[in-house]
Image (cartoon, rainbow, N blue to C red):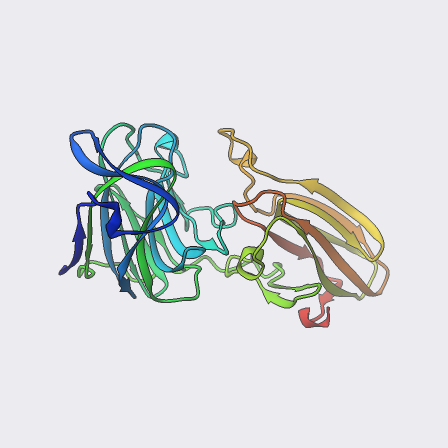
Length: 327
């Protein structure tokens, strides 16, 4: 690796702050940057590279590295969570769209990994990124490999980010080493998954490669409601099974009949199922007469961040989905 940039982070004036607070302090024997929010290196943009920094926290915090920063509202992000040390989400990839963190949409082994994250002590946090992949590592522990980064831009600024205060020092940016991994493949998508929706007032939009519809990618404000639709052509009156997940509040109907209503939001609880992840854990079934029927999903974003979206699978042999652009 060849060193491109280094900064001991002793002077916040070297950084551009975005909705952030920063000051120089002494912490655990080092002069450090105490940060809350996003701080960007304004003189450095990268398409690919290696970024590492020393990080520490006194308790609950989400400190990490922002990269390919387009602006203060859109960037790739990964961080460590000292307060969930050892759990499945101790390392988290969390792309930010229109100012919204979207970790409820990007979860599972491609976006999260268990790691031992210390509290009250310094640890090294690093990211390698190139093309569509990233490697995220805490110290010498096994890395999290992200096989497909979410942001559309391939270059951007480098930054530091944390929700709740944390400490940073010794930022170093280098070229990639020779052992950078090849891009890993995502698991193939279930063919029953709906991969596009028509959004009323907006048009047809595509789901992510995982099958999850990321509304934050297209719409700037999650505090609202959208109506999603698809037309189904039923060939014979046999049951159709719907498997779906969502965030934050959903009402499903077929034609004029409501078939589901529910809420799935974040709860500060240790159980996975209470975190508000978008996963197809809900199921319902219906039998429709032959002909065309409209599937409608009214989806409300009631949380200011965390992810606003939907995933749905339709199972059965008696129907076909009509193109999403039919509205």
